[in-house]
Image (cartoon, rainbow, N blue to C red; front, side, top):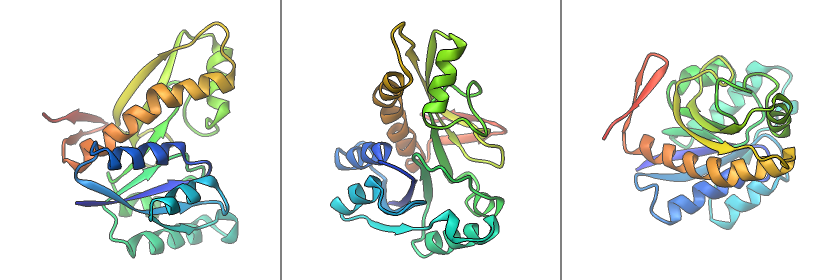
Length: 208
């Protein structure tokens, strides 16, 4: 059974999708043992506590440098013997020390079809605003491994969502979460926990 840590910064809807998947037996070989927030008082922490999951707050502004912040994160994670880190709406960029320590053991969900509308500055509603401004007909979500390039790691799963004529950024954000993020993130976590993701360069292969 693999120990999973989920890193959050907000309401924790993707965290809830993972909790539900664990409860419903869709993630068989993993369990969420730790939730770390970059902000105090967010709803994601309450979601974790309701299910008896240990929590911690490691706030970026409490540390004078990114290196100190990385060390604090590593100290918190290493105490729990974590096998997989899931970034679920985590708005702080992980530094090289964390990425190297957990190489190919960190996955992120991004609300677009990478490589479109991704990278530094693309998060939250900003992604969906850009999608609508570009006039594309489809968008979606991507789950990928994390490396030193923001949103640049090997892609695990993607799911497309149609962009509708009357969409606002808020409406599109909700539909992408419900129809894409909440489905492919638990699926990717389950695949990782079952040892079914093989990394080949900057690509992945899902094993049967």
